[in-house]
Amino acid sequence: MIFIILTAFYAWSQVYYDATPNALEYLKDSGQVTVEKQDNIITDTLGVTSSTYTFIPEGKKQNIGVIFYPGGKVDARAYAYLGYGLANKGYKTVIVQMPLKLAVFSPGYAEKIINKHSGIGKWVIGGHSLGGSMAASFTRNNPEHIKGLFLLASYPASSVDLRNLDIDVLSLSGDKDGIADAEKIKNSSGVLPIDRTVFIEIEGANHSQFGDYGFQKGDLEADISQDRQHEIVINSVLELLHDQ
Image (cartoon, rainbow, N blue to C red; front, side, top):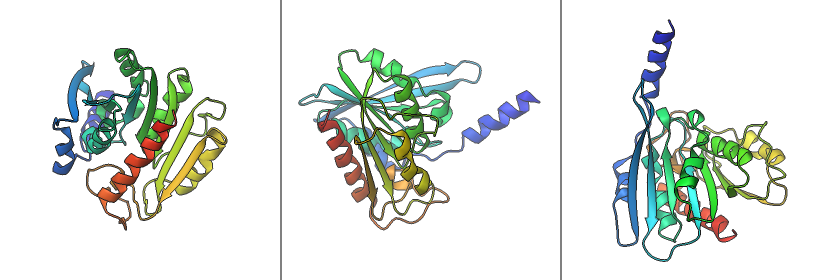
């Protein structure tokens, strides 16, 4: 019975939102950014893999690294626009393809990245939807590593209290989001650092366009283009990074 349940769950996990061809364009090396992919076996029994996509700036390099956790059941490559955009401004950025594409299975993955890139002095972590919640959990459990947190259509669990941490937080949401709970995003101010959290609601933005994986079931239609939403996300995260 347990085997049947595990098999059914694994089959369910293989149905996910894939990155669009447009998203894959940002994985190509350019004169400004180099992209490296690394695979790791997490569970030998099922052959579950976890990957990282590292966006490396080729010009001026900042001493701040960025780690990003994708939304649940979303291909990590769907956020390549963000990795490329931040690396293009000098910030090495690592996007994690979680086991079974669910960050809940490896919320502590960021520690492996931090240990591997020991030359980087400060780190900012963020995520979309479920990925943001797990990034917040990592921050709560590893405050010595993280200087900033950004949440895209996301919020920490009510038990994840970040109020007393020495970090800056950015919460980005969209007023056309049909997936994330707007009230929970608003109420998350109760567990985020007082006077160090910035809430921005993007007019016309929906849930799906925080990535590049097509339209997510249950979402609302956006009133702004995906390119415009991506531009706002990149610029907002860059402001957070500039403050570190």
